[in-house]
Length: 371
Image 1 (spheres, rainbow, N blue to C red):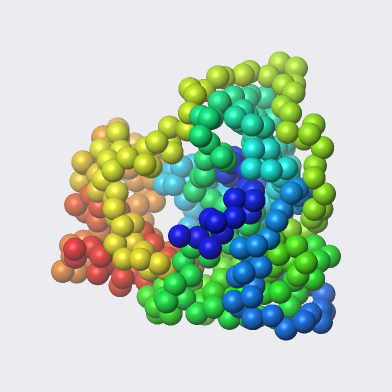
Image 2 (cartoon, one colour):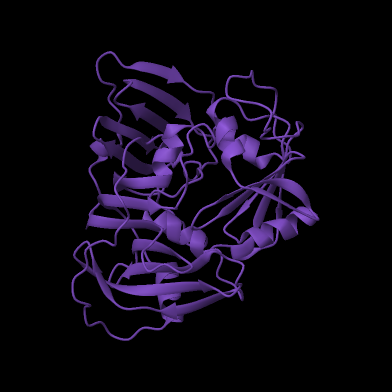
C-alpha cells in the first residue's frame, strides 16, 4: 500500500484521462535547469517519508513539464495511435490546479490547443479545444477523487505510485539537495535491489517546507539522463479561485453526457476478464512485476499477413501488423514470439497469443512465459 494512502489530502491529483490524449512534443529529454545545490539541514530518508505522510495541502496551482525518452520505435497503431505515442515521447506542458480532493483540474497544452479535465464535486468534464467537444460525467457519491488512468500527470502522482513499491526490494537513500521551480528541495532516491529491473533509480525532489514532490525522475540502467521526468517549473501553494473549476462551454461546443459512475475503462480494469476476451494477471511483485495478458485469438503478429489484409478478431491490424513483424524474433523453452524493448520496459508478444510486459529484462519475461 502506498505510503501516502493514509493522507487523503496528499492525493490531490486531477483525473488522468486526458493524459492519453495529448498530441505533440518531440524534443529530446534533458535534465531541467538546476541552480547550485541549496544548503539545507540534514534530513534522513525516514524523516522525508514521514514528511510526505504528514504534509497538508490545501491548494496548489502550477506548470508541470513532462519529458520522456523511452528509446522506443514508432508505435502508432500498436499502443493506441498517435495520442498515446505522444505521451510516451517528447516534451509536454501541463497546467494543474488543486483545491481539495473534489476540486481538481489539469490542462494539457500543445501548439494547436489544449485538452482539459475538470472535477468540481461529482461533476467531471473533459474538453478538447481543437475538436471543440466536451464530455460530462457524474461520479458516484462514494467517489473521493476522479478515477486514475495509466499515466501520471504530475510529480505527486508519479511519486505516490513509486512509493507504493517501497519494501525490502527497494533501497531508500538521500540524494543531493536541489532547487526546483524556485523552491529548495530534498531528494529521495529509490533504487531497486533486483537486477532484473530496468529501473536504475527513481529520484523524487521534495519541497523542503511544504513537503510536496516537485520533481520526479526515472533513470534506466546505464544512463545518466532521465528516461522519464515530471517537474514543476512554476508552483503556487495558494488555493486557486473557484472559477478555475467551473466549466463554461465555449460557443458551438458539442457536449456528450456520459453514463453516471466510473469510466468504462476503470470498470474493465476491475474485472478479472475483459469483454474483449483478454485475461490479465501479474507475475512477481514490486519493481519486477510482469503483466501477462492472454487473448482468445492466437498470433498477435503473423509474418504471413500484411497491413493490406483484413483484421481478424483479437489480432493486430493495419500498420501494427507491419510493426510487429518488424520486431526481433525470439524463442526458447517458453515458446516463440517477438520482442519490443525500450529503456525502461520490455514487451514480449508470443505466437500463441500472450502479451507479457514489465520494467524488466527480456530474460525475466521469458521466465514468466514459462509459467
